[in-house]
Image (cartoon, rainbow, N blue to C red; front, top):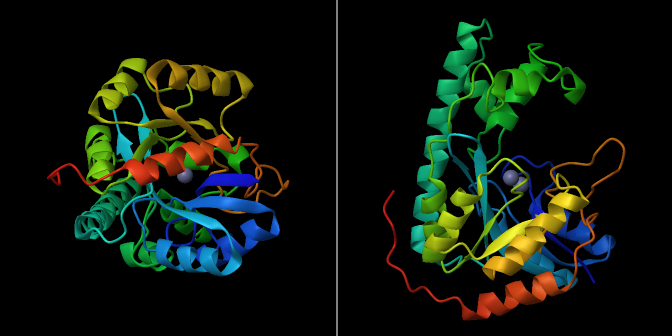
Amino acid sequence: MAVDLHIHSNVSDGVYSPRELVVMARNRGVSALALTDHDSVNGVPSALLAGKELGALVIPGVELSTDIAESEIHILGFCIDMTSTYLHEALQILRERRIVRCEKILKRLRIVGIDIPLSYVLSLGKEGFTGRGQIFKAMVKLGFARPERSFGDFGKYLGKTGLAYVEHQGFSPEQAVEFIRACSGVPVLAHPGAQIPLYVIENLIHMGLEGIEAYHPSHNKETCRKWLKFAKRHGLIVTGGSDFHRPNPDGSLDLGGMTIPDEVVMELIKRWRKTMPDKPTPAF
Ligand SMILES: [Zn+2]
Ligand SMILES: [Zn+2]
């Protein structure tokens, strides 16, 4: 069976609806998938419903954005309890903080002569979601940036060292791990690449991190092997996915396009049955 445990819908910065994604996945022979929108689980109910109708295992997920000094850290949460009121309340606060961050970024852009109203950026996102993706889209639409990656305009203005970059206003990486555990989920470090210092990851393991995303389009074979070894050494589960947002012009790294062993899903399901809400809800 083909699996894909990292997919974004138009509830955050992807282009397809959750239902369309499940249909696409089934058409490509993917039988287990996780919807992992940025700071939102609003697409999960319709993905679960479509999964039931079409015979695909849909795992409720989320991807939380956090910052450390050296880098950005994304924490995936799988098998989260969708009935948790704390989950929805906390994500609502994150949504509001995303808007505050967006306002700060727009203020910095104004200093360099790029004037974009907040209302315009908000109109480009669904359900009040806003992020750098929407800001960049607004910049392109209004002629302030070129969409082609080769020009590097995203990095120049909105990348971690970009002119208008503002840190995420949400969780710290530790809080993200705690939050996912408090929602009965399995916290997994997303696409660690080569930037995140090992001591940071070891600290997160201490906080309850349970897995690492070794299979990711940004990892070459060597990086993937490195994290597989790391996972084994620390008793972490391994996950993987395409991090699909929209079709690539060259058709590469598409939905369901990563080769990921079936055991990955088996391990996750085992944890799903085991995880229990055993922690008080953390404040942040
Ligand atoms: Zn990510
Ligand atoms: Zn992602």
